[in-house]
Image (cartoon, rainbow, N blue to C red; front, side, top):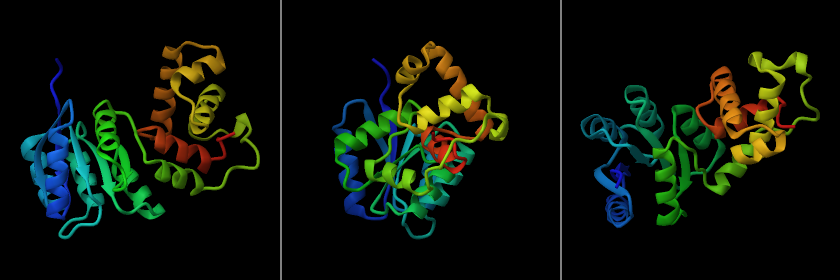
Length: 217
């Protein structure tokens, strides 16, 4: 059996912290290791406990969740952060993602969805609340036409731009492979290359890049 995913819970409300700790203790494959009441304490506990995932609130005294995420990710790149907050406005979403958050959920999420987000983050995958994903896509206008190949940004190849457009369309690696009639391993290779070129950590940032640069097709 694989080791459980170690989670640090961060929230300024004691009732929320205690409730999450109790619920996560009952979740298969997850082990809550500590709880912090603000961002500063989260940074210290992350240094002390080296969790796999931090479940992070945003609006907190002393040090907010965005800055705490930035500091934790900067000092411990192997630690992933999943935001759990009541705020789903554009500013909060983009600030958290830019700071390095891997997932973003609102507090309407149930424990099953929170557990899925933690498991996904531990596997370095992204899981976003559907409302958050919709706001992410609507934050920038869809392009009127695709950017010509000779004007592709960041030295993207036409194939990489094509893969990026399909990611923006919500397709999985398997679906992209089927659409382009290539292997899934080749798709992963294209994604690794284009992520490196555009500076994206995950698919959420890649989607935002695609729409911002007129590559969403």
